[in-house]
Length: 316
Image (cartoon, rainbow, N blue to C red; front, top):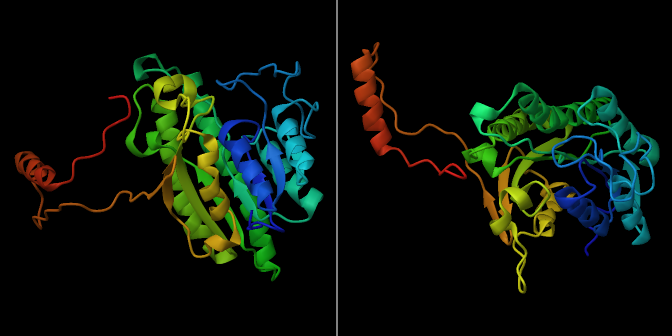
């Protein structure tokens, strides 16, 4: 390893398993000091008894066999520095505690990776309000609150003359870019994360903070059931769906080496990295006056004939 993140303090949410765990281990391998956050809940966000026999712990990391504590112990066993945090980052208290843990443990915070999430998949006609609210809460609010508390710290540092070289990496999804059948709540939340990323990049640049997002495809608890065939590990050869494939880009985005890169969304899968190009004006017609409904419809059809065909919704 190159020591790309030596001296940096990195917080990763949802880092007890899957992508978050892979990110935390990859950052540690590049010299970062970690705060490993995970609430220790089940795939649908409900409280779950972990394999060690204990439910998720409190803000101090909880029992030693919780997901966050195990990953932190794994990093320390490999010679790195890590502390566990098992608070709920979709609450103001939990998000504030997350940032405070980094500052109290290491005296600084350089990178925030927002990764925590779960699924409550339903077709829209069967999707109830609780499942909508729960997914919005963990994904969208669970990105906003840690971002907001980290940004407040970095703004204070900038105003005190200690200019940060800070990074935020948010976790979107192809579902938020193209949509995904049976995942209306998840797709809407992930689309919101992309918009949040763009706003944060614009607002926080003055304080030395860069904000980007990834749309990863990898085998996790959330995807290995929904897309079982696609996510299955091969018997031999390159495992394109391994979550470890996503982490190198995240580590680079979270490092000082990514200077000047902000407000971008990257799709990453296997050995492929794609810069996503979002909404922008396409074919346009301007009458210079009000259209009649019939004229508007005729014009819209002409413009659609000139426009690019949109990407296919996942599962359609």
